[in-house]
Image (cartoon, rainbow, N blue to C red):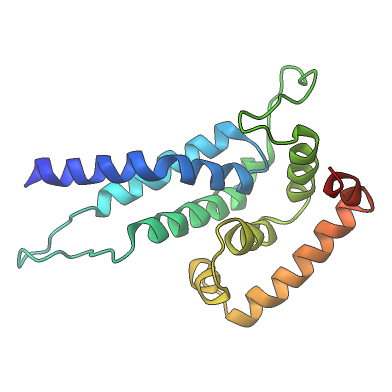
Length: 178
């Protein structure tokens, strides 16, 4: 029984960790070290629930959609981290010389501009934008993940997009033309 539990979890973790990491990078505005920590924390929490059985032998914590649940755990871990006082501390030895080209051939200048604009948003706004537009979740799914109402998600989405457009200014048309 224990072997099948671990095998099932290892298969899940191997299949979802890349996707979780990409989402975490967006949430953390490109802080890959924090993103790795968040993914590790998410997978640790998922493992604690994975295949747990109650006193009757039935599954006590059945997760109908483990991938969606993992994304929800990731967002909540990010928001919990942001509430801590030390969340804003980022030691830097030296600044990078330039942005590196993406492996998928993306535009590094666009990526840096978007990550900087996302970094300027409050954590909950960033979480709403990542869930709605990166993960392509519905308003209801986003509301459930963040434990807020659907109206709050709609309002926060509109305001966060307006702030993002404001931060990007007219420069976004320069990137869109590429």
